[in-house]
Image (spheres, rainbow, N blue to C red):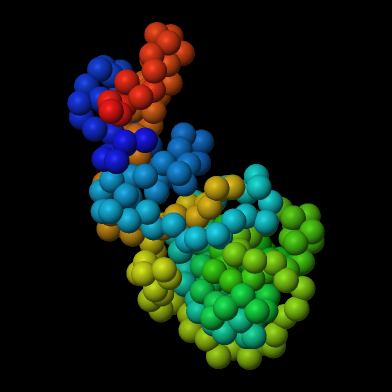
Length: 224
């Protein structure tokens, strides 16, 4: 790719047909975390990716509003309390102190699923992978380990998080798929979705020109 924006105006001008507008209802079908991270980079100079956080099952895809929690990895009790402080259809995002202990497993997943949560994303460690997959409850994490800590409940819920210099609050939007997890600040949602639409428009035209016109990609992108 070129060093500049993925959607430079001097490349986009040739496309006269507008693609379907991307929104939260169709984003998992029409776009990906890759596209969203590119949009964030284009607009704000940051990808807003949670590094190495991946689904425990590659087919899991999620989008929704975040409910925040933070805890020491030895304390899984905070995570259980956070389930019931969350609203149905939210995504529980848990920031852990480290990867040493699992803070999430089968029983937590069943409780969250029954409570109506969309998914749990752990910036930390989970376990009981096979059991969670059987539940078909989406869980994303940085690591998987068998050992767990204690139900101490000494963490925080619904407070502002800082993860990899990304400020995250309850109500922000999280999108996750097999490639990773990206955060969209709620106040920037419409602008990001518009840029995602532009990127998909650009990529569609690039593929069309390669396939139908046998054009070289470096020429299309004006890479010199």
